[in-house]
Image (tube, rainbow, N blue to C red):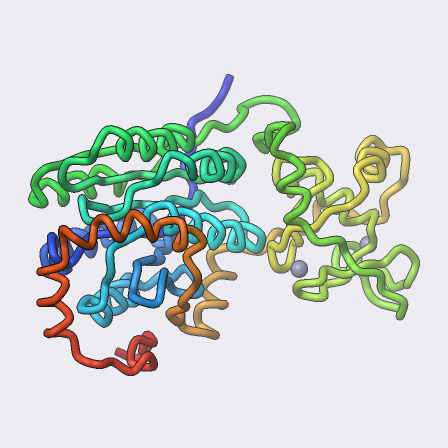
Length: 371
Ligand SMILES: [Zn+2]
Ligand SMILES: [Zn+2]
């Protein structure tokens, strides 16, 4: 039997609405209410925003608990938003989430794509690359929801729907912006995931064919030569003591092997550091030998307590406020032909927009945290 459960969510909002068609002010309140409702439901939910500016995709360097950071980023760049390239945006958003997943456990990741007729749809030839990526990350778990405003053509709808279905997300197409609010309210409910209810292994296993991807994300613990105190059993020594490359916490390999039994990510020898949640890996057979009692353990693991992930994330956010980062759109070159075709349609409104646009120092786009 399986149980349906929810978890704390990290939600990345991909704002892909075209300024000539839909102004930020028309959707600002809906996006604000969406985040508000999610946080009222679970204060540990976090947010990020990705959108296209003339220099490419921009987003915050980390998820934030504060919805105001998202709203002020949206406000501060509203006059510079460019047509979104959906393929590039989904790719950049997903690789960002992979980086976060590498460091943080106990989360469900969600990508909320809000696009319209002015966004560049996913060309069919780039679909396989995106499908392959989504197929791997869906086990994190990772969901993609899409709200399309306007009328998509058959190919665009089909390609978007494929990615949505692959991640078990939801797809909506609306003709009127007024419907956005009620859809966002629906989407503010948590996603449900399945958890095995019985058996020793309560962690959902990662599918065999996707395991190499996750094993590659993991770091090998580093060897330590000096005498150190194991952070799990508190005994001193330098025999088989290793450290987490991310936070430098030291532990016996054997202690970590035992810890991995309850803290693996769905692959028995790939687990989270108990201090910083970074993904680590040990030798597969070594883990089996420890967990089946062939290699005796030093630790009394019942004394161990896992850090609270939300407290940990709040500590991190208190140390550094999120900053806007700009990145390359990997599909930009390929989308050029399509942009050329669309330019004809939008050339007049584009001209108008350019006239209105003042020269802006790139530094001004940097998100000011004290606003
Ligand atoms: Zn130890
Ligand atoms: Zn660590």
